[in-house]
Image (cartoon, rainbow, N blue to C red; front, side, top):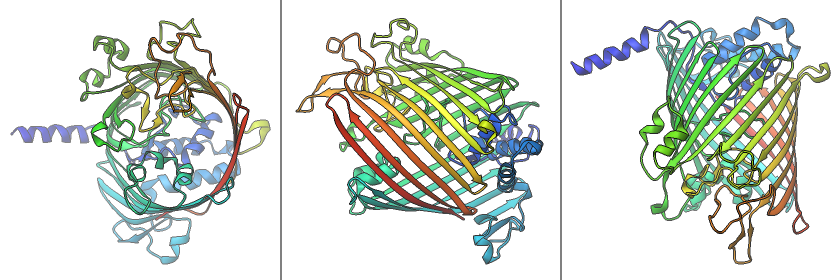
Length: 561
């Protein structure tokens, strides 16, 4: 009887909310459609796209495309072609043999003609659709060759294959499973430069096998409902790449430039109000001795108000903790974490942030984030005190500058004070493996970032980035001992009684970097993408007057069917 009651409650939740027509699987945050939606938002064609919480379901992507299609008179020729391209991809209920191909099976009613494999049709290995149930299977692969020009002999070849299995049940429960396995030939060190994910892949870092190999996996369940008109509610459990907060070069809150986390998540939107709660788990640094490994947890709550065509602003908080299982205090979405952390005897690493994004001026958006780490209110006026662990980031996105269609310009400045992301307990640092969860330039650094991107047509995008980064590194003696702690590493906290109370910004061993990146992405046939990139790095150690210049390029082919 008890099991029957539970089943009945579940079915009521699943079926009794208003009808929804769409796929509830999430679209990966690196998908190019987000660039198009962002440009349409800056153009004031779209209003609220929650860029601070960028992941969207296929259903939500479709709703945005429908809004864009109502204002095609304001689109350029290339934007109209991009819109049509994404409509074919995300209007799942309109998929048929005229626009979609599947390699095996015929249940979905898609084309099976062999010559459609190299056409602009959507491609699946296998697809199944029936009322209330559907699933799609894709195989994908990548080959990537990179050449380091200094020294010229360093080169690497990466190659991998994988599959993605996704679908939606009853138009409310989305699911996805992704598996990827690959190998590396050539320089191991340079391969990790080409694909930084290798720096935190266990099989690659462990290096116990005679073949350099790596693997990645993601998967989740996501339930979505619209209980009232204008209200949405979703729950998700699993793992996938996420980003959080604003920022163009790298976000201060969750950049995504770190290992994929396992998490439970709630998102709620109604009217001008939005709320997100995430509780995630990850690990500390890699150790050969597995007895030294440990799990750490990241909890986030965020509230936001958004006013269409004007501004959106929010406040968020997070806690990182370790040394115990899941703490029920941080599962509570309706609590102020910092005060809870104090009531739990001040063991954990807390942060608070404030942010905003404007939308009151067509073709120009401003955004900013102010990040307060660990002790946000005690020493804001004392900018030299090491306790004042703050960072801020301000940027602008200018679309169609000087009336040049399909061109975007981004400018951004980031400043992160010493000791930001650190904690007195190194296990609670704002890191995962050996990567910072937040902005990758790290503490005691600042950055000027500029980016220019141009959509030549719906299949070709050109990009150029410039970064000027200043960083104050910690100083070590000839034996590797820390001789001066400048607060320049997220893994090295302030040492009471040893390190100075006051620290100047960019103190320590000064490293200045100029980084230039040219990127070209070309998709001659749908789901077959070529990418070429060239990067020039010019580093100068100001303290010791030493130059260290390097450059490299890579060519990458990605395919999916």
